[in-house]
Length: 261
Image (spheres, rainbow, N blue to C red):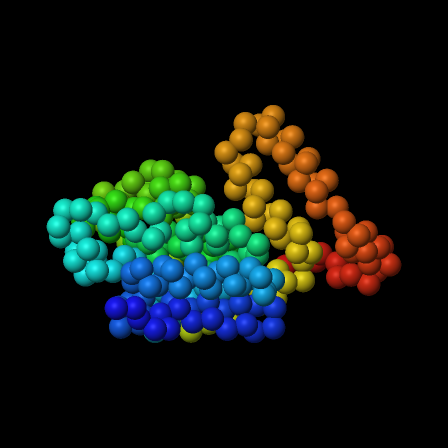
């Protein structure tokens, strides 16, 4: 039977807040969550300039709902999962969608939860977050693009270590290894994500789209192909808004880049 409100959606100005809402199940994925998440991400792409993905309760997401998986697979006939790789999965519509997404992480960020975070464009964690890939101990394998996205963040060797040994990363390790870009005190992860989202919303939407959609593809190209594609994207992003923003800089009405405090 379908569960209600397993994914929440709120539009806060130009920011879409998308929440995983199965706190009693550590926000684990089942078909209802995966389908609801895809719908919410697509809606955000139409209505907002930036999205924030977070988890209700004490955790971001502990991955696949193993009780559901065990029931679905006990006959030996694996059911096709809604998030099985395709261009329409919630991972892909977030990673290559219309707007940037920030993953606000706390508590358990495991398995498919870490894969989901890796599909976002910026990751913020608070001090309660912990990161793991326990699929090996469960007799399964990752299936949400993590073997590509997480490996690019962590590096192949560290990811293989986590999958083989069950190693769990603390927030400072996750930041040091490139899994997250920011670590904040407990309870401040949404506030930090909103702070970053407001900055992103001030960018030209076409530039944001080029950044989130071209940079990952460039990593797959040869040097020559990448430089050619980069030039095409640079030309594509030029618009009347570009001229307006350049003139604002020249007129000294645009903010200057300053050294950090």
